[in-house]
Each structure stands twice: as C-alpha cells, then as structure tokens.
Amino acid sequence: MKAFGVIALGALSATALAETIHTKVAILGGGVSGISAALNLTLNGVNDFVLVEARDELAGRAQTKKLGNTTIELGCNWVQGLGTNPINELSLKYGLKTTNTDYGDVSYIDQDGTAMGLNIFIFRFDGLYGKMQDMGLKRLADGEVDISGRTGLSLAGWMPETPMDSAIEYFAYDWETGETPEVSSMDFSALNGVAYSSDFGPDADHDRMVIDQRGFKYIFQKEAQRVFKKNDKRLKLNTKVKSIAYNKNSVTITTDKDTIIADYAITTFSLGVLQHRDVKWVPEMPDWKLEGLFGFHMATYTKIFLEFPTKFWDNTEFTLYANPTRGLHSAWQNMNAPNYFPNKEGNYIFMVTVTQDYSYHVEAMTDSQVQDELMGVLKKMYGDKIPNPTGIIVPRWHSNPLFRGSYSNWPIGELDQHHENMIAPLHNRVFFAGEAMSKRYFGFLQGAWTTGANAASAVNQCLKKKCPTATYYPKLYNAKSKGDKVKRDIV
Ligand SMILES: Cc1cc2nc3c(=O)[nH]c(=O)nc-3n(C[C@H](O)[C@H](O)[C@H](O)COP(=O)(O)OP(=O)(O)OC[C@H]3O[C@@H](n4cnc5c(N)ncnc54)[C@H](O)[C@@H]3O)c2cc1C
Ligand SMILES: *[C@@H]1O[C@H](CO)[C@@H](O)[C@H](O)[C@H]1NC(C)=O
Ligand SMILES: *[C@@H]1O[C@H](CO)[C@@H](O)[C@H](O)[C@H]1NC(C)=O
Image: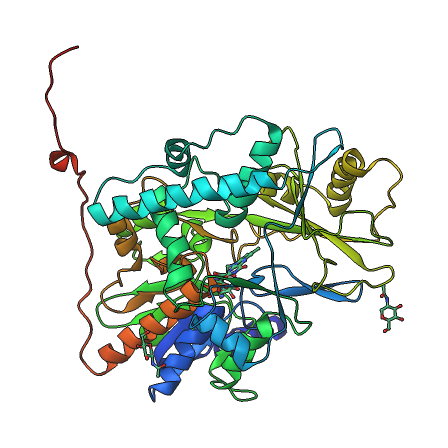
C-alpha cells in the first residue's frame, strides 16, 4: 500500500513538472545567432517565442575564462571586418576594448632554436595568397568548378620547401580557415575573405582583437537584455533539446525539462552538432539536406594559453617556430605585446594555436600532458632555463557536445547548391540559422548574426501568411557538359 502510494505520487509529480508550452516561435540555441533571431522578432513586434539554451548563459561560442588576473577568450576573439559589420557596430556601441593586430610583427625561430631575421617571408606568401584569392573570385564569377586551396596556392606559385615555409603557410592559411589548404575550397575561401573586407564599406578591411575584461560575450548579452527582462519565462537556460519533430503544421521540441509545441522553429545549433546527430530529428531530415550538412566541414581551432612568472619570449606580437611537423605548436602569440594585456608580474601569457588533427591530439590529453609537450617545444625554442608555467587553459571545442568544433570551413567538393540545401527550411516550419548557414560570412560572428536575423525575418513573414519561397535541389548533377573542349592533333 505504502509502496503503491509512493509510485503514484512519483508519477504524478513527473507529469506535473514536464510542462507543455505552446508558442509561435521556438529559437533553439542561445549563441549569437539565437540572440540575433530573438532581437529581430522583438523589433518586429513578435513577442510570443521561447529561446532554449543548454548552457547557463547566452552567447554560445563567445566564452571567457580567467588565467591569473586576466580574462581570456576561449572562443571568438577578433572583430573581423570593421565598418558596418554588425559585430563592429555592437563593439562600438558598447565601447568594447579592442586592439590592433599586426600580422607582420613576427619573430621567426628555426627548428634548432636559432632566431631568423626573415620578415620578408610572410610578405611573399601574402602576395601569392592575394593572387590565389583573385583567381578564386574570377572562377566563381565565371562559374568554373572549384579547386582546393592547395591547387590554388600552387598555381599562384607558392611551393613551401622548408619547415619555416610551412610554418608561415600554416599561420596565414590554417590559422584563419581552421583547416589545411588541401581540404579547403579555393573559391569560397576567397569569397569569405573578400566579403569581410569589402561588404562593410571602405574602412572594413581590418580586424580588432578583443581584450575587454568583460569578455567578447558582453556585447551579445547586452543585446539579449533588450529582449529578455529579468526572470523572463521565455528564456530557458540550462535546458537541453533532445528531439525535434516537425510536420507541415507545427514543430514539437522535446527538451530534458519539457515539451514545446511551436508554429515555427529556428535552429541555430552548430554544424558540428547537426552532423553529430546530437539532436534527434523526427522524421529524419531528407537526404538532399543531409548531403549538404555532412559535406560541409566543422573545423577545430584551439588556442592554448600558458601563464608564466616571467616573460622569456620576443616582444613581437607573433612568433613562428619552424617545427618540422607542419601545424604542430608553430604559431605563438604574445598576449603581452604592446597594446595587448598589460605586463603584470606573474601573469605573462603566451598562447599557441593548433587546429584539426592536432586539436584532437591535444583534446585527448590531460592539461598536464599538454603542458609537458608544450614545454618540450618551448625549450627547443628558448633553451632549458625557462620557468615552468603557473597556469594553463586548454579549450576542448571538438569533444564538447554543444559545439563539436570551433567554426565551419567550406571544403572542396561542397557546391553552392549543397549549401543552399543546408539552409533550406523543412516544410517552411523549421528554419536554419547559425554561422555555417552564411554563404559569405561562414565561420565569422557576422555570419551567426545575419543568419539569425534572416531566419527570424522569414518566420515573421510566415506568421503574416506570406512565407518566402524556399528553394532546394533534390538532386545535384555535375557540370561536365559545360566545359570547353578543344580538339588538337597529337604533337
Ligand atoms: C576558438 C574559436 C575562435 C573563433 N574566432 C573567431 C573570431 O576571431 N572572429 C569571429 O568572427 N568568429 C570567431 N569564431 C566563430 C564564432 O565564435 C562563431 O561564428 C559564432 O559564435 C557562432 O554563433 P552561433 O550562434 O552560430 O553558434 P553557437 O555559438 O554554437 O550557438 C549555438 C548554441 O546552441 C547551444 N546548444 C547546442 N546544442 C544544444 C542542445 N541540444 N540543446 C540546447 N542548446 C544547445 C550551444 O550551447 C550554443 O550556445 C571563433 C570560434 C571559436 C570556437
Ligand atoms: C591579482 O590581483 C590581486 C588583487 O588585485 C593581487 O593581489 C594579485 O597579486 C594579482 N595577481 C597577479 C598574478 O597579478
Ligand atoms: C530583421 O532581419 C531582416 C533580415 O536580415 C532585416 O532586413 C531587418 O531589417 C531586420 N529587422 C529589424 C527590425 O532589425
């Protein structure tokens, strides 16, 4: 009798807790894209929505951590593209503290630790990179097939021969795209680069590194406060989406706390989360969409921060080490360079960036193993007398089930139409936003911001019974028939 009572009570409280919420719009994910979607709906007079976010705060990949007394950025760090870039406008609106980065201010250290005065190197690469970029844009305009970044670099005349050549190439290429030139699209990398330097007016072609101790996230959380007041029931933090069921009439979202039945949903989950099947789709997404999503790349970009009691590295902003293994601990940044973080006794920070396979390599180790490996490299660079670090931060973006990587990169093999299929809504009920859904700004914060607003705007039109026409390609065929064919005699 008693046992029965307990069971009955348990069942009752479980159903009472699992609320069913009815809303017009469910925004899934509270990163920059989700915030932008919520703001756009609000400014358009739509207030009947909820935003679901698994973490305990908004801003997604804008995250900070303290190393000694300094707040550092685990994720996004640069306003990339100034002028009318919406991220730059927010940065100016909230007086975010940023600093100039000079990518030519580099020290070069050869593999045996010899300092090399070879500033000229990076400029030679830059020239050839520019040539490749022009080639990519021209091919895109002419409708020619895409080629890889590697093919493009070779055609432009760049042939890395020494470990330092590779370190320079890594710093200029992978350090930006998050992946190697072998797997990257030349055409869409070129578009991505030119979009940020030219879409936002004549002064746009620069970037600013955020060193604000409130963190990059501050400006996005402030924008979110324009939407959500204190204890706003529409904001569901610490709530994880488990499944999304959609049909022609509505979307049902099951979370670890409740059920949300919405007229429309906007998903802003990272490409990595969508690829990894962390959220269940009912029914499964159609193949034309999955092909686009699976074909795109989620890169991993890992900034490892080391704190030292003294500063033993060069005063330049960057130091490149000619590690014989390309991409392994070769691109270092001096976080105490002039105009960066102040030189504070005991709080000197040297940062190294790794990507892709070396990010996975690092993520699989403990922090102290990573530290040992890095000390081995630093001793080759500066000798055995350097002090031990007093702190280390190793972000693990790839293994984090809420991100599954850092940002997207357009790979060779993904067509423009594949990308349109990625963005195409399902039944005009589920809309797709997030950094990866931007053709021009994938990888960047402005990609997250603009796609969030675009999806909200489409939903707003649907609410007014004027859904924009969505396009997708059920099947994609190659362009063989369009190539020029020249016949010639055998010579
Ligand atoms: C290391 C690193 C460096 C970067 N550097 C720069 C830079 O310098 N400049 C720049 O412009 N961009 C940079 N970026 C990219 C930039 O951070 C992203 O483009 C942007 O933050 C993506 O925003 P988003 O809203 O599209 O996605 P996200 O920020 O990923 O937002 C999605 C949200 O969904 C949540 N979520 C995931 N799964 C679930 C679930 N099942 N249930 C509920 N919630 C869930 C996540 O917690 C997250 O908050 C960098 C990113 C990283 C990681
Ligand atoms: C950090 O700040 C505290 C208080 O301001 C100070 O006592 C301490 O010495 C600082 N530590 C470092 C490493 O700068
Ligand atoms: C909402 O987003 C759309 C599409 O990006 C944009 O044109 C519109 O100006 C935005 N509305 C507001 C009020 O910000």
